[in-house]
Length: 87
Image (cartoon, rainbow, N blue to C red):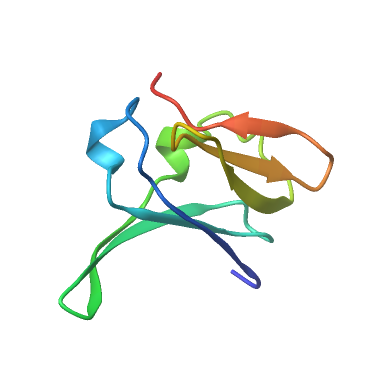
């Protein structure tokens, strides 16, 4: 990628498998990644793009957001907001 876009640690309830994972992305490739932080280092790094955006709708990934319930959102350069949720 060319530009890392920082995200959040997932603390929501809708996706138990993501709890405690940091989600972030790349603006140029629109790819979303995740890892866990353990004992002072990155562990279990994975790419989530195919799961979160299988149709390639996120174009120009620009930011992440979090609501009061700990659910996460991704925004695109065009102004779209996408909630990260189960299929």
